[in-house]
Image (cartoon, rainbow, N blue to C red; front, side):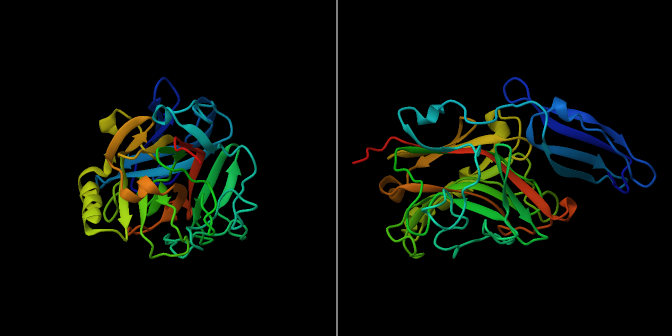
Length: 353
């Protein structure tokens, strides 16, 4: 590694163990006069699968900087991977869908052939990533499977990033009506402009009508980057409801929630690691009265359920976007960052006629 103007770097990585595991010091790197040094990472001692190695230092100008190096550990210790037992929040509900990505990916535009659509319905007309969401079938396909993980890559070099939707343009797909529960386990990248998310939308009567009112439930929106002009991710991520095309009263309700409760500091909930240090389970339970958000089965926020969410089914989206109003700079990471999804599953307690 090379870090001009630095003389010493510390290297940390999250390690398996009791409870949440622990952030461990891998070692210290003493740099030569050119700011160059190296370290051997003991991969077999760390979790199998996606890892974030944090490289930190203070330079001669007393400037503190972090580099978040993403690795995929082909060896190591299997730790919390795969589908666990049913979550407490889904008590009394039935599992209606689960995917732990053990099999070949099923992503495309045809609901008769595939499990997921690779754009935001309808037809990607509301895609929002500054590095564009790209079809699975294209040469710059952003999706791949690593062992039992879905990898979504945002690549500034090939101008591609990825989103999967459980609903297709014809209104078919995976959805659930209240009371219901959705959850996803993943790790995201902390880079300037990175924007991994797991979120829900209500199903419209006419999917292709962008003007039709709908609810959006953001279970996690994580904004990467640190320093001037960046959101300074640290341990915080965002969650919030949106009442699109609905009354001013509902819009104020959502705005008030965003202003007062949407920033989730996991440390305040006794969760010692961030969304980019190791994988976490992000969940949301929607009932006819309350919408409750979870991280690793710990409640982190709640609000009254929006009217449309009470009456319409919801579907999920998982994406690694870039931008979100923030500057994007992936140059430190050779233009490429990754989101690794361990699994996603859906429960419903709704009565089906």
